Length: 409
Image (cartoon, rainbow, N blue to C red; front, top):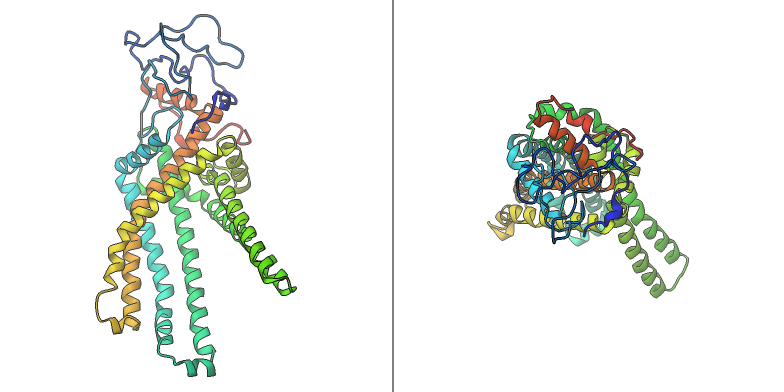
């Protein structure tokens, strides 16, 4: 699932022949006498600032530049968690794991801190409702028929608390993902930063990130609410039941496909907000353009990552869920049992989130980096920066390096 050679749209602004050659060509970091290395080609670079590619090895075929799967003569520059070239899925997964291992305090520690705070707030909102929900089991059918509010009141109160807790969790995850994205932006060059430094990077991006999360939620809810409204309207108008059911299935299927499409197209907006310092609308447009031409590959990587994260989270939290099944079966609906179950589930969610959130954020951010490399030759910018640092230059701050000169490109 890689793009073709036409995926390279344009060189990065300001790139010149003095900068490192394209991926696969020998550069200053390679041994010129090493097997497979070739002298630089003669002549002048073609229009646009790109040097001509190195000649193919005798009797062999050149590996296809950025997108081919062949072998390359020169070693790939890798100052941090990823090689500075367009990435394969394995590179992204390895990079996400390396990112966690290289910065355990700023990744696992930060994730544990944010997830724990969010879970405590959520439990504080929901626990007062558990007693009322447990009391519903003690209401007889006759009492419920005589006083429906005895059941509806606690149920609606619990649903409201669950919704509020979900909002708290969503906002916490937005903040956490933004901070982890800032850490990854530096990990590409092997830099390590503290939690405080990560907060300094992302604190000015919190409102745009929250705005993006709200817009994404509204889009998804809208995609499903419109079909529900139409089906209810047609059902009330007297349309035959079979036709209503068929229409509901068609609209629901279409809604799922549209929601998946929009989620995939907007999946890179979060990293763009943090690393490029742009607003919500610009980031959404930017994500659409970066995903363009590589939709199915982006979708496949995101889907596989979601499956992996879901399986790991389920495996980690399952023991805590099983603990709630022990004890007197007759007491499973008591208030105390609700409390114990909620707390144990919260502990499981904290541990699972601590492990999976950095990995998920890492894959998404590295997918964003890969799309910029393929669509904008951003790897040449990263290679230039890495070579300058090797030569003793102070280098550009990563938060400035990731920002394109033209964010609308």
